[in-house]
Amino acid sequence: MRHYLFAIYLVFTLSAATAQKKMSLAECLQLGIDRNLSLKTQAGNIEKGKHAISENRARLLPQINLAGAFNDNFNPPVSVTDGTAYGKTYNVTKTLQYNSSAAVQLQMPLYSQTSLTAIEISKTLDQINQLTYEKAREDLMMQISKLYYLIQNTEEQIGIIKENITRIEELKGITEAFYDNGMAMEVDVKRVSVNLENLKVQHDNALSMLQQQYNILKYTLDYPEAESIAVMPAEPDKLYATEASGLNHDMYELQLLRTQQDLAQQQVKLARQGYLPTLTLTGSWAYSAYTDKFHHWWHSGESNHWYNSNGIGLSLRLPIFDGFEKRAKIRKAKVESDNARIAYENSLKNLETQYVNALNDIANNRRNFQKQRDNYLLAEDVYKVTSVQYREGTASMTAVLQDEMSMSDAQNNYLTAHYNYMVSNLTLLKLTGKLDQLLK
View 1 (tube, rainbow, N blue to C red):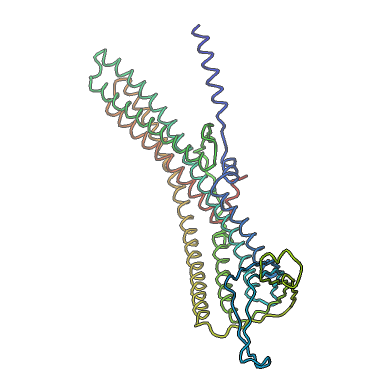
View 2: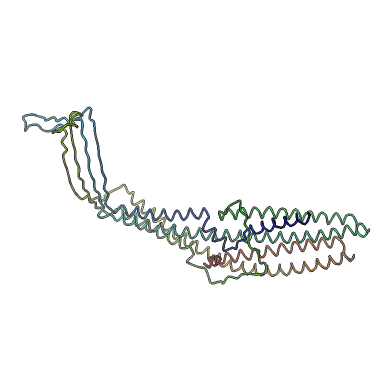
């Protein structure tokens, strides 16, 4: 019966392990690009920008409107004109109480340089939306990659803590046996028990941290909360080197700043074009009717006759003086253009500094990793020797615990050095424009 229950437990354990999908970094990155909600918002801005281009183009097309009106002049206005032709001093004409009109109106710009520049600006804004999306995509890849490496690092730490717990449990058993035989003191048993409990607390804390990291990864990937997810095991002994090919001047961040410079110059151009004239084609086809009584609308006659009026014309608008408003706009646009140029130069110098520092960091982290690995292997050998000596009765419990603590610190430093190297390599990938290699 006991074997049967164990077999059932083993089946359920294997099923749960199988259901937990292990995802590579490339799979996580692709899933994040496809499903991340913040990135979808940036994609929506691209679509909105394309509609803005169509909106500005529509201003150069004919605008046709249908207009209609009905008025009840319950106190009709009058018009007074010269009446000498009729033997009167003044001729007073009273408007009929009811009037209505219907018209088709046409308006089409023939020359409007500001409208043409507005189209250019909308196209530039569309480019900015595209570059903003690409930069957000790149930032998302950096975020996911760092989180992925952090989870791998935490899982490696948990594995090391488990191994240390197993060793200390064995040591505790040996110490208790020594104590029972009068070969060890009670304080030695307490020392190893305290050390064991500390390791268990570290293990629980690391598990809690790992769960939080996975929750953040699920949110970033828009992964279902109820489903399990796991990353591939880390390979601490392998270091992936990126070729130092120089700073990529076509980074999306720099392209975005250059495009913003173009936009600022177009804004200056648009402000200056406010002094140019605009020429518009206008036309109308209208009917109007008047009557003195409302019920006359339903009878034929002069009182409800519709009078036709048609026309076509040109409208010219030439700005003369606007209280120096355009001059202020031009000066403000020039300041924004200068600021955009300065922002580009500042970002370029900053990225060049980041590239130099990234080269220094990756070289330093590589050296640290190699030293910490050697130190970890050395500490492990020392602990093994001390542990054997303790079993033989030639080493104290204090020496064993001290060497175990030194080995644990060396292990953590080794994993931290590997994580730091992976992050510095990730930064170099971004600065050299090779971040998409992670998707392969």
